[in-house]
Length: 155
Image 1 (cartoon, rainbow, N blue to C red):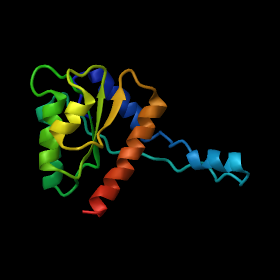
Image 2: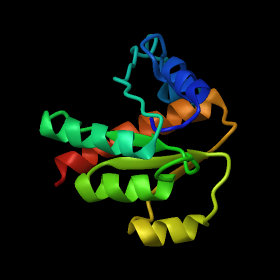
Image 3: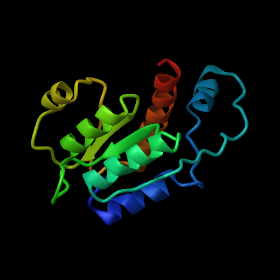
Image 4: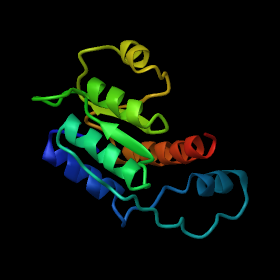
């Protein structure tokens, strides 16, 4: 997570920390369509690293690659004064690790989604607008994690 607001970083730690359980979407489907729901969903946890500036986040991506433990995804704020903004941070992260999944988590952006996609060279960037619902944030993290694993396997 790369965000200049320590409160937001703490929210992410709580939202994705080890006590979090993934909502059992398949359980809901089975309830709706008549099959017996499975037991409680397995506990999910993420290893969470945070950075308060773009350069720091980029350096963590580089270190993780050098240590052969690349990140699956990154959540990046767009406005992080002073220093690199979210766009520059994302571009440099993806230049170093093209397999990284990225989501932009921001209240404001000075450029459009289309321009971001064009400049980054990837139309599959996810966006999460602040303030966000915790369940939506959890589902986004889970989706990014799954996509990141698939992207690394298929390379």
